[in-house]
Amino acid sequence: MDKNKKHESGKIDKESVIPIYYQLAKILKDKIFSGEFKPEEKLPPENNIAGEYGISRMTVRRAIAELIDAGMVYAEKGSGTFVARPCLENVVFELKNFQEEIRERGLKPRTRLLEVKIVKSNQDLSERLQVPLNTRCLFFRLLISAEREPLIYENKYVVYKKQNPILEKELKDPSLSNLALLHADSMPIRSKRVLLASVTDKEESSILSVKLNTPVFVIEQTLYDTDKKTVGWGKSICRGDRFKLSSDVGWPFD
Image 1 (tube, one colour):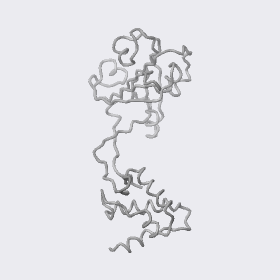
Image 2 (cartoon, rainbow, N blue to C red; image 1 turned 180 degrees about the horizontal axis):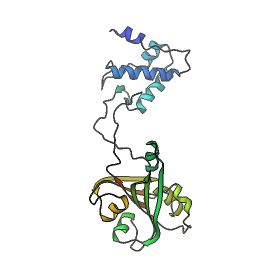
Image 3 (cartoon, one colour; image 1 turned 60 degrees about the horizontal axis):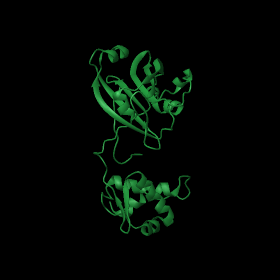
């Protein structure tokens, strides 16, 4: 098939309610998917594309910006715009809010507060929170279930400065970030999560109603404020037989 026929199959409809820049971005995306524009190949100049489709250069620029945001092309100053290689090896797992994850499965999550108390940080907790020994911390122990089946066991610590009362309504959003907003002295603005594989100990097995040494995912979360100080740390033990991790990388499909 020659290029003229390819262009015929990807016309711009100026009467359409779909924005012209979006139509052009779709045409260019299709050309990349089909292999007409190959990885590391330079796209035609903006003026050429504008003339070919009878549109403004500004519209072309906006369409290309969409492809840049999607990671499909990249611009080199003074050289032009090039087709990017799909990033297929950089694995990034999306870790959603557990309540949201459970709801997406059509189930109703239930959070039960097992324990809440003020504790003084020991050596391990002091190192995780970057605070002196015996710093007062708010400790939460929670169990998340669905359809009466225990799924996630959580331990959360917040550096306790505000001295606010602990209210039952906090369980509507018992996320570490929300607890830190309510009880820490500074506002968390950044979160770091680390995923580990483990097996349940005696306490975790009992709470999750599984056998000893059952495989689990452990997700450790640390919150930081604007001064890069730690304001909270938590650990979530997720049943390995009820959760799976997926990673979707590369160019986006429609």
